[in-house]
Image (cartoon, rainbow, N blue to C red; front, side, top):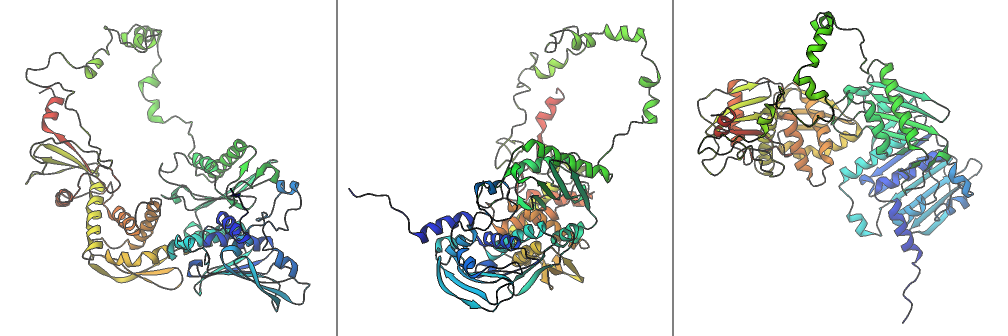
Length: 620
């Protein structure tokens, strides 16, 4: 038998290795931008076409490379940043593994131009499939330009797995944002398909955050700064009212390197505890500077996951820094040790607890029940609390012919996480006509039915109604549009602008008429006819935020996410008062739905109470 193990050819080995580093166009953007930063550039330009599938080019004014270095840079594990094993424990540069350019050259057609200040002419190199096709002198300013074209041209299967241009462009913007955020002293620009999306001049960290994440953060940032001998924590955190339903605006940098850390994120979340809703996420851009010997960044090919020598210390410092920053700006709720005057007038405070009262209290059965040793699980027969057992114990004195009271409690049907009252095999549940409905806490509607009554949650019910209406509109007849008398302009961040532009065709089917207007700006010309006008800008912004929230659900299509987002946004919210006519219309529309008992996300829209169960509750 012949031997079966053999060495892979270099070009195949390079393509396999490239899969670890270059997973999509945004991966190449990250590596090229970081190389430009390491070159000492003060100005970096990123140019992409077709969401990076056709072209990704990075131009910098850094130190440049010699002819030999330019050729050597495309070899695997070729780097200028590591000389011996000790250097791995004091890394300050962004790149160090020597794999980025080799991986890029293995899956794309690459053109490099570079010149050092001391060289009269630069170097031009053309590489395809890891092989050098051309190398010659070229006139070029000091710095480097790397252009990679037709990513995965030689790996068609990998190219087929790329997402739509809108999705890939959002990933590119995310990587660009992370690198630009980490180095506010460097000027960055991003041009996509000939249109400049970002032009960021060098400046302060706060200016960079506002330019990248939006002007709405300009007055909503709290300065975070804590310096110790072990580490420094600095940056900005958003005030509690900036918390969103998604964690998009959260950035951690360790020694200027963007990282992902659920552990450190928990430290920030715990500092915001009881200040923001449980399902919301605060905004923060935090930098941690510490000795490189205390961390290991060589644990993942993308270098976005690192290990700390002592995570607990980092956790404590981050949490303390956020708490201190929030308290310093009078955002953290404070304890008031002055007793309220109303409390001081109560008998329990104004009158002393005499010995006579103490003896009378100690002699009571209630006091003894909870103070005698080993009696926590017992209730004495003479105790004033004896009757509590009757509530849980079936009575032996049931009326003849009447089933046990526990036999027909609420039965829950778990259909897509739905919770609803089981109405049993008889007549189907229906609303009674010509009856008044009751509105409770501006949230719940009590509606009589042929079997008892139902308790409707107005927001959940309206969300189900709108969801089915929009689903039908997307499949059959588009919703009518009501033109705005005065068109409304809405500026967005670059990432949100890319997202909205991708959603415009589907939004038109749902009654929205929105048109692009220059850079990252849109004009709302019309909205669905059944939507109240006057708050269109906020509605679109919140719809995009909810769309990002649904984006975490991979199982949904783009249109499904959009429909769920708009249904949630347009649904009448809790706390909104409804007239008798509005309540009846809401209840009737809900029961006209194909699945009236649950929201699109699976929460109940109503709970039904049967008449016989209500009678048994009162012992009838």
